[in-house]
Image (cartoon, rainbow, N blue to C red; front, side):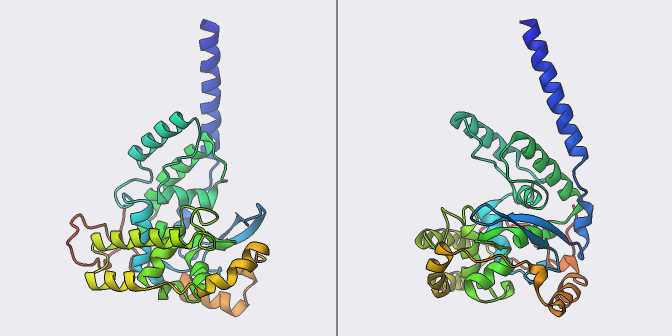
Length: 312
């Protein structure tokens, strides 16, 4: 019995030691605060193949925080991480509930990841579902919360999130689905893109489940109204709006039968890259893109941007 206990303790100590070493080898996150920061990560297509993806202002679809509609930010926050402005990178209560669920189901299906954790995973980690990766994810998320503003975190999240077959980031998503830049998205279109996030490949794939996406976007619009992000007139107009899904219908057959070839953002014309880098990435004041904390009273007027930058 004692030998078994000692053996288990040695295994635990060995595991914790390996985790500690792996954490010490993780990349620094302070560089993410630099508005000119850029890197290349690997993203998957729908056939499981990896492709390079440029993160930062050299990506021609990159949308700086100040050009992301407030409705887009709030749509993902309210739908994906309602405690985004109050947690330190991870939600302890959500993690406890996820552990309980996974133990009951004997699986690792529920991750309880916050927006910050998802951003850390997308930028630095693999998609494997293991305890070690989850520990790394939480650690990186905590560090990001210490080094970055909430506005910078949501900017990274929205620019690397998957929205379709090799469609990553709301800049590319807005062009792909609606033929417009992200800055021109309507509240309904913002809710539509946010509605896809839990599963753009299957569950909330608008090619196959358009009605399901529209229904979830209606729910998100109600949340935006309840929290005062939208006024009553704005809400009614958004609900009455039918997303221009004609572009979707034209793409259904061709995308499902022959997935589009990946085009690296870095292959854009040089002058476009330079213009984007200088005009949108290098000189922008970060505080202009930060979003204030959620109102606690459902009856408060629509949220207005703060003038000062948000610091942790």
